[in-house]
Length: 225
Image 1 (cartoon, helix red, strand yellow):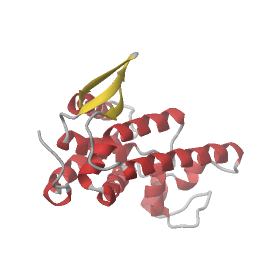
Image 2: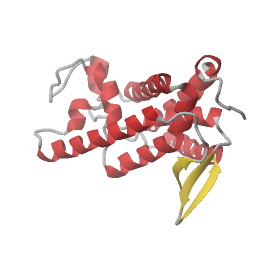
Image 3: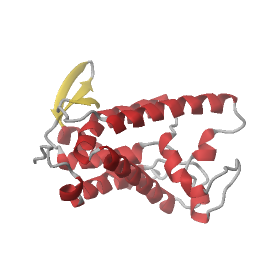
Protein backbone atom coordinates (compact mmCIF):
# COMPACT_ATOMS: atom_id res chain seq x y z
CA UNK A 1 0.00 0.00 0.00
CA UNK A 2 1.28 3.44 -0.97
CA UNK A 3 1.11 6.12 1.71
CA UNK A 4 1.63 9.58 0.17
CA UNK A 5 3.96 11.80 2.18
CA UNK A 6 4.69 14.92 0.14
CA UNK A 7 4.97 16.32 -3.34
CA UNK A 8 8.40 16.53 -4.92
CA UNK A 9 7.19 19.32 -7.20
CA UNK A 10 8.41 22.79 -6.15
CA UNK A 11 5.74 25.45 -5.64
CA UNK A 12 5.94 29.18 -6.22
CA UNK A 13 4.27 30.11 -2.94
CA UNK A 14 4.11 28.62 0.54
CA UNK A 15 0.95 26.51 1.02
CA UNK A 16 -0.46 28.74 3.74
CA UNK A 17 -4.05 27.48 3.56
CA UNK A 18 -3.00 23.84 3.43
CA UNK A 19 -0.85 24.38 6.52
CA UNK A 20 -3.65 26.29 8.24
CA UNK A 21 -6.16 23.52 7.53
CA UNK A 22 -3.81 20.86 8.88
CA UNK A 23 -3.11 22.85 12.04
CA UNK A 24 -6.81 23.59 12.54
CA UNK A 25 -7.75 19.94 12.16
CA UNK A 26 -5.10 18.87 14.67
CA UNK A 27 -6.13 21.49 17.26
CA UNK A 28 -9.82 20.62 16.90
CA UNK A 29 -9.03 16.93 17.21
CA UNK A 30 -7.25 17.58 20.51
CA UNK A 31 -10.28 19.52 21.73
CA UNK A 32 -12.57 16.75 20.51
CA UNK A 33 -10.50 14.09 22.26
CA UNK A 34 -10.55 15.95 25.60
CA UNK A 35 -14.23 16.89 25.35
CA UNK A 36 -15.31 13.37 24.43
CA UNK A 37 -13.37 12.01 27.38
CA UNK A 38 -14.54 14.47 30.01
CA UNK A 39 -17.52 16.32 28.50
CA UNK A 40 -21.23 15.52 28.78
CA UNK A 41 -21.68 14.41 25.15
CA UNK A 42 -19.61 13.45 22.08
CA UNK A 43 -18.57 16.45 19.99
CA UNK A 44 -19.53 14.60 16.80
CA UNK A 45 -23.22 14.62 17.80
CA UNK A 46 -23.18 18.38 18.31
CA UNK A 47 -21.04 19.43 15.34
CA UNK A 48 -21.14 16.44 12.98
CA UNK A 49 -23.39 16.33 9.91
CA UNK A 50 -26.40 14.22 10.91
CA UNK A 51 -28.58 13.43 7.86
CA UNK A 52 -31.81 13.27 9.88
CA UNK A 53 -31.20 16.79 11.20
CA UNK A 54 -30.08 18.30 7.92
CA UNK A 55 -32.95 16.93 5.82
CA UNK A 56 -35.50 18.15 8.36
CA UNK A 57 -33.67 21.22 9.67
CA UNK A 58 -34.40 19.85 13.12
CA UNK A 59 -31.79 19.86 15.86
CA UNK A 60 -31.65 16.70 17.96
CA UNK A 61 -30.03 16.67 21.42
CA UNK A 62 -27.44 17.85 22.24
CA UNK A 63 -28.71 21.22 21.05
CA UNK A 64 -26.42 23.69 19.34
CA UNK A 65 -26.74 27.46 19.32
CA UNK A 66 -26.51 27.95 15.56
CA UNK A 67 -28.46 26.75 12.50
CA UNK A 68 -28.17 23.04 11.70
CA UNK A 69 -26.76 23.61 8.15
CA UNK A 70 -23.58 24.99 9.74
CA UNK A 71 -22.69 21.39 10.58
CA UNK A 72 -21.98 20.85 6.88
CA UNK A 73 -18.82 22.87 7.55
CA UNK A 74 -18.03 22.03 11.18
CA UNK A 75 -18.18 18.30 10.40
CA UNK A 76 -15.24 18.72 8.01
CA UNK A 77 -12.94 19.46 10.95
CA UNK A 78 -13.88 16.49 13.14
CA UNK A 79 -12.34 13.03 12.97
CA UNK A 80 -13.18 9.61 14.31
CA UNK A 81 -9.74 8.77 15.68
CA UNK A 82 -6.04 9.39 15.37
CA UNK A 83 -5.65 7.16 12.30
CA UNK A 84 -8.54 8.94 10.58
CA UNK A 85 -6.89 12.29 11.29
CA UNK A 86 -3.34 11.29 10.34
CA UNK A 87 -4.45 9.60 7.13
CA UNK A 88 -6.45 12.61 6.00
CA UNK A 89 -3.72 15.10 6.89
CA UNK A 90 -1.06 13.10 5.04
CA UNK A 91 -3.16 13.15 1.88
CA UNK A 92 -3.93 16.86 2.30
CA UNK A 93 -0.25 17.69 2.80
CA UNK A 94 0.85 15.57 -0.17
CA UNK A 95 -1.66 16.94 -2.67
CA UNK A 96 -2.77 20.27 -1.22
CA UNK A 97 0.35 22.35 -1.86
CA UNK A 98 0.30 21.97 -5.65
CA UNK A 99 -3.43 22.63 -5.93
CA UNK A 100 -3.26 25.63 -3.60
CA UNK A 101 -0.32 27.01 -5.57
CA UNK A 102 -2.37 26.70 -8.75
CA UNK A 103 -5.60 28.20 -7.39
CA UNK A 104 -4.21 30.82 -5.05
CA UNK A 105 -4.82 30.89 -1.30
CA UNK A 106 -8.38 32.24 -1.01
CA UNK A 107 -9.77 30.39 -4.01
CA UNK A 108 -8.21 27.17 -2.76
CA UNK A 109 -9.99 27.59 0.58
CA UNK A 110 -13.31 28.20 -1.18
CA UNK A 111 -12.66 25.19 -3.41
CA UNK A 112 -11.81 22.99 -0.41
CA UNK A 113 -14.95 23.92 1.52
CA UNK A 114 -17.17 23.62 -1.55
CA UNK A 115 -15.94 20.10 -2.27
CA UNK A 116 -16.32 19.13 1.38
CA UNK A 117 -19.85 20.48 1.76
CA UNK A 118 -20.99 18.97 -1.55
CA UNK A 119 -19.49 15.60 -0.65
CA UNK A 120 -21.27 15.64 2.70
CA UNK A 121 -24.57 16.58 1.07
CA UNK A 122 -24.32 13.61 -1.29
CA UNK A 123 -24.10 11.31 1.73
CA UNK A 124 -26.90 13.12 3.55
CA UNK A 125 -29.27 12.80 0.59
CA UNK A 126 -28.70 9.06 0.26
CA UNK A 127 -28.92 8.43 4.01
CA UNK A 128 -31.58 10.96 4.97
CA UNK A 129 -32.98 8.93 7.89
CA UNK A 130 -29.62 8.28 9.52
CA UNK A 131 -29.04 9.77 12.96
CA UNK A 132 -25.35 8.85 12.91
CA UNK A 133 -23.08 11.89 12.42
CA UNK A 134 -20.82 12.06 9.39
CA UNK A 135 -17.45 13.57 10.25
CA UNK A 136 -14.09 14.01 8.56
CA UNK A 137 -12.27 16.00 5.89
CA UNK A 138 -12.20 13.09 3.45
CA UNK A 139 -14.71 14.57 0.99
CA UNK A 140 -12.86 17.88 0.81
CA UNK A 141 -9.49 16.16 0.45
CA UNK A 142 -10.92 13.90 -2.23
CA UNK A 143 -11.77 17.09 -4.12
CA UNK A 144 -8.16 18.24 -3.78
CA UNK A 145 -7.01 14.87 -5.13
CA UNK A 146 -9.42 15.18 -8.06
CA UNK A 147 -8.04 18.59 -8.95
CA UNK A 148 -4.47 17.34 -8.56
CA UNK A 149 -5.21 14.35 -10.79
CA UNK A 150 -6.47 16.67 -13.53
CA UNK A 151 -3.86 19.42 -13.20
CA UNK A 152 -0.71 17.61 -12.09
CA UNK A 153 -0.94 13.93 -13.10
CA UNK A 154 2.83 13.68 -13.68
CA UNK A 155 3.98 15.49 -10.53
CA UNK A 156 6.09 13.14 -8.43
CA UNK A 157 4.68 12.21 -5.04
CA UNK A 158 7.00 10.80 -2.39
CA UNK A 159 5.33 7.77 -0.82
CA UNK A 160 6.03 5.26 1.90
CA UNK A 161 6.07 1.75 0.46
CA UNK A 162 6.72 -0.81 3.18
CA UNK A 163 9.94 0.55 4.72
CA UNK A 164 11.10 2.57 1.71
CA UNK A 165 10.39 6.07 0.45
CA UNK A 166 9.82 6.07 -3.28
CA UNK A 167 8.29 8.57 -5.69
CA UNK A 168 5.56 7.94 -8.23
CA UNK A 169 3.60 10.14 -10.63
CA UNK A 170 0.50 11.49 -8.90
CA UNK A 171 -1.76 9.63 -11.32
CA UNK A 172 -0.25 6.32 -10.21
CA UNK A 173 -1.04 7.16 -6.58
CA UNK A 174 -4.48 8.68 -7.08
CA UNK A 175 -6.02 6.38 -9.71
CA UNK A 176 -5.97 3.18 -7.60
CA UNK A 177 -7.42 5.15 -4.68
CA UNK A 178 -10.48 6.39 -6.58
CA UNK A 179 -11.02 2.98 -8.18
CA UNK A 180 -11.11 1.43 -4.70
CA UNK A 181 -13.61 4.07 -3.55
CA UNK A 182 -15.89 3.35 -6.50
CA UNK A 183 -15.68 -0.42 -6.01
CA UNK A 184 -16.45 -0.05 -2.31
CA UNK A 185 -19.37 2.22 -3.11
CA UNK A 186 -20.82 -0.42 -5.42
CA UNK A 187 -20.36 -3.27 -2.95
CA UNK A 188 -23.25 -4.37 -0.67
CA UNK A 189 -23.27 -3.09 2.88
CA UNK A 190 -21.11 -0.02 2.29
CA UNK A 191 -23.72 2.56 3.27
CA UNK A 192 -22.25 3.05 6.74
CA UNK A 193 -19.00 4.30 5.25
CA UNK A 194 -19.15 7.51 3.25
CA UNK A 195 -17.68 6.23 0.00
CA UNK A 196 -20.26 8.32 -1.86
CA UNK A 197 -18.76 11.42 -0.24
CA UNK A 198 -15.27 10.43 -1.38
CA UNK A 199 -16.42 9.80 -4.96
CA UNK A 200 -18.51 12.98 -5.10
CA UNK A 201 -15.68 15.11 -3.75
CA UNK A 202 -13.16 13.63 -6.18
CA UNK A 203 -15.17 14.17 -9.35
CA UNK A 204 -16.38 17.59 -8.24
CA UNK A 205 -12.75 18.55 -7.70
CA UNK A 206 -11.90 17.41 -11.21
CA UNK A 207 -14.90 19.25 -12.64
CA UNK A 208 -14.13 22.54 -10.89
CA UNK A 209 -10.45 22.39 -11.84
CA UNK A 210 -11.40 21.87 -15.48
CA UNK A 211 -14.27 24.37 -15.45
CA UNK A 212 -12.33 27.23 -13.91
CA UNK A 213 -8.86 26.43 -15.21
CA UNK A 214 -8.73 29.56 -17.35
CA UNK A 215 -10.29 31.81 -14.66
CA UNK A 216 -8.97 30.49 -11.35
CA UNK A 217 -5.68 28.79 -12.10
CA UNK A 218 -2.69 31.10 -11.85
CA UNK A 219 -1.04 31.83 -15.19
CA UNK A 220 2.44 31.39 -13.75
CA UNK A 221 1.84 27.77 -12.81
CA UNK A 222 3.10 25.06 -15.12
CA UNK A 223 0.11 22.80 -15.80
CA UNK A 224 0.55 20.10 -18.39
CA UNK A 225 -0.74 16.64 -19.17
